[in-house]
Length: 76
Image 1: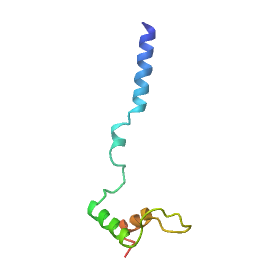
Image 2: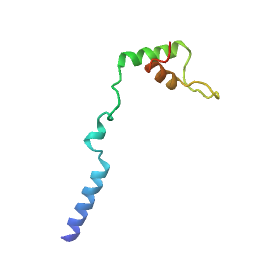
Image 3: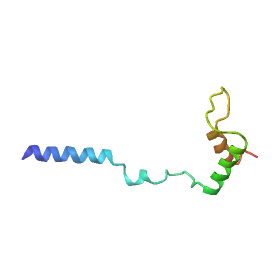
Image 4: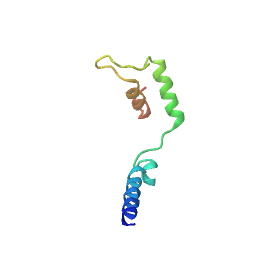
């Protein structure tokens, strides 16, 4: 009987570790919500300017970096 209780407690504690808490499933505190229209415009602008992906050239700007800069308003 004692083994059954101990096994149940161990299993419950492992399940609690495996399932993320409710707060972590939500948006991180301090993070801004993403404007989907602006994101799509920045992705389109990146495609128009030739950022296709890869970015294996040393010193090259990666598409992700370009889109982040665009979302921050640093790209004209």
